[in-house]
Image (cartoon, rainbow, N blue to C red; front, top):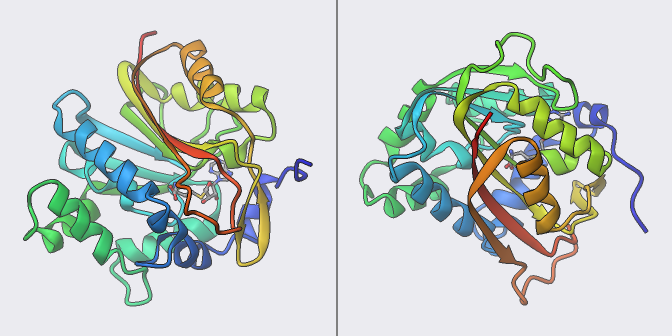
Length: 263
Ligand code: SAH
């Protein structure tokens, strides 16, 4: 049975960003590390941002949360990155890393892996510094509002990136479809949407708190993106590995999508 929807405001109180990072991204035990999600998306991101097609002045990351992995390749080809999230807790955790505070999460192993994939294995320190310099702002965002960011004008981004956010923020498929249109108002015509998410998941756990997830399949995402005025250029799916037996989420697969905004 579907879990009752986790209201967005719960992310401001019950979502513990540090526990999220430890459970999903820590070296060796993180669920997204062990289930090959990271390997899958990092390779796709390297491919996308080194091909010379997706690049420009401004990239907006929607629902950044406390994570940086999704920005490690993008920072090489965009002049500025705006990080955004609904929850102040997530934005604060991200800022700990941004300000290089000692309590910040150790992204070292993931940064090293991306540097290896990019053929720059000696450039880890430079890569984190480059990302820190490229992130120009960390601001509040609500994908369910027609203007998700108060302070940015429509059509200001050359690229929108979003990972593991819309399926948490949207209570039903209509809200998800609207959320894509809402965030798309920030993107210039001809700009790119780079989106990563889970397929057929109903919940995930952080610190024993059960968060709802909008259940959908690959066909639904593709249609929602097309109907919002995009042409899909790349769509990859990674099924959940057979040896993934943990119970902290019930997803069946991951997807990676690149699409170009036509109108
Ligand atoms: N992008 C990160 C974080 C995913 S966690 C990653 O790839 O791991 C989901 C994030 O979505 C949380 O930080 C949460 O605060 C944010 N979120 C939830 N509702 C939102 C909304 N309505 N608008 C924007 N962000 C939202």
